[in-house]
Amino acid sequence: MESPKTIVPGTVWYDTDGNPINAHGGGIMYHDGVYYWYGEYKGDSTYYRDDICVGWRAEAGGVSCYSSTDLENWKFEGVVLLSEPDDVHSDLHPSQIIERPKVIYNDKTKKFVMWMHIDDPNYEKAHTGIAVSDSPTGLFTYLGSFKPNGGDSRDQTIFKDDDGRAYHIYSSEWNKTLYIGLLNNDYTQHTGVYTRNFIDQYREAPAVFKHKGKYYIISSGCTGWDSNTAQCAVADSMLGEWKVIGNPCIGEDAEKTYYAQSTYVLPIGGKKGLIIAMFDRWNKTDLDDSRYVWLPLTFRDGKPVIEWKDEWVLAE
Ligand code: DGJ
Image 1 (cartoon, rainbow, N blue to C red):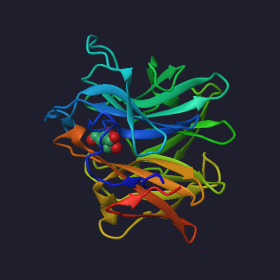
Image 2: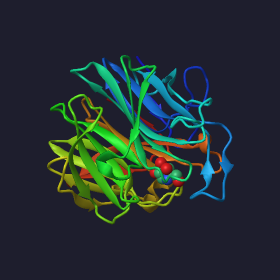
Image 3: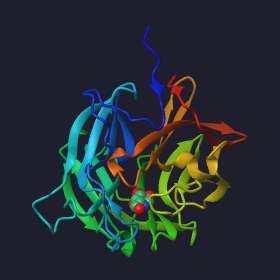
Image 4: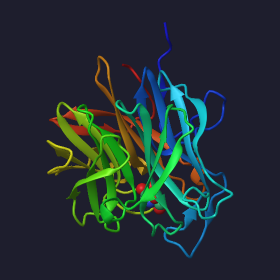
């Protein structure tokens, strides 16, 4: 019999080579029986600059990818979007910001499409960046960055719906308002169709999932690397209208999201209908030692509920 697959939130997680997993602000794509975890590959020396906002930074090392068939044993597939240390003008120079990468597969073009937050060290550029690859393990080719729908784009995610439509969900207007934009058929551009949501509510770290025909967004407040209270909202359509239904976290430290911040929600399905809520527990003075907090998300009275667990078993 296979041994149970155990998740221990907040501890150091190692890959199959024995190295700590370095995939922050990440997301998971399931493709042909394999889970691919993409995230920020952070440099190992965190530094502080008092001339920039929330000044703790680590070098941006590109985007890493890990693969797994059981969500417990993760093989390092390498840095699949490389940083560009030799080009100080590149978006991908290690001094810049490459955050919250997410990848989806386009069934028509057969390309894997990555969207990410691209910024300058002071978070003033507020671009979204796009890269594509023929393989889930890269290398990804960087296509460039821009301001979607003419406005800021900072914290972000991508959601691919069952009907093949995909959406970019991003903090805009100096993080005050969360935009949701419909992407074009090949997922490399916006269509110009978008909505403004949670206006003036400062929501960051969006994580989107669909459950029984309804759409859910879990997001954080806006307090730099420090934790705050998560919020969940529900809608009948990705473009809204979104109805806020409160903090999905319950129990001790729920108002601090267990000292973590949302990044992705992964519905696994299976007999028990497992849904994994993924968070980052940032360590701002040693950013690459930020930890992963994955917890089961269940439904109570029709609302998502997340509860802290010291340890839990992934039972499909
Ligand atoms: C909060 C965001 O959610 C993170 O991705 C990161 O950009 C930090 N702010 C930086 O302070």
